[in-house]
Length: 319
Figure 1 (cartoon, rainbow, N blue to C red):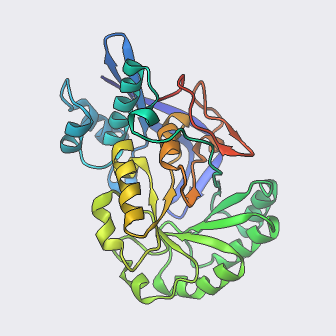
Figure 2: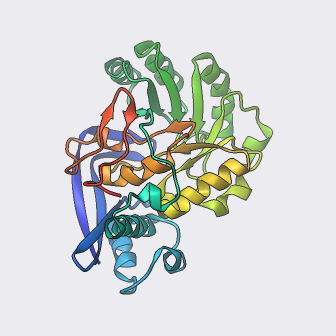
């Protein structure tokens, strides 16, 4: 097993309410058995107390032999377990000559329409971004400040026909959300991600939700679900939060069984990180796997994105 740091340049600066970046820094894990190697990618996330160094140490601390079942006890849900879990799935696919979706008992996947993210900026800049990408069927707007109303209006002006979802990244107060909610509905917003900070979102249970509200930072794995009842309508499943494909598939099934709608999202990473998430996204209400579209460079055998959406990976990439 090896772990390597890789850096991918972004096509442009990417900004959310917590900060801005110009590159995606990821960790790539390779697990080898004889001449065959499986691989996976993760994006350590400071919001969850992760760094490249701390996650690499978690991975390096794994024993010489483990499987998907024992991995759950060896590492907590998070980026390190995600990369190792996805590498295990890829290695098993190579050893058996079967695709991962066959091994997981899933149907053959197809393309899924994905959101394209517009990063937080001035209203004029966001209007220009929206106009540039108005041909895309689904736009995701990064917001999260008390001055978001002009930005929202500007994006709708720039892309009058596009479907729109909004991600506040925990940046609003209950008062901000209450003020904005009627305007979200008026402007045709279909979904709001994480309007209030995780751990401070109990107010959502007493508030009208005219637009469906999706838990992102408040939802990691299946253990998160009981605390979301009555506050959220949907959950955003990300492999880096859930700790890999194994838990992400289980979370998807559990969330649906408990009445939550499912969104499948991503951190800003390469096609290798998105590949297993495409399997989870089959039939999701919202798919947000645009990481590679935000990059200036990507892996070899990258995922295909076209008018039909993001396509499942070729075996040459993963799975």
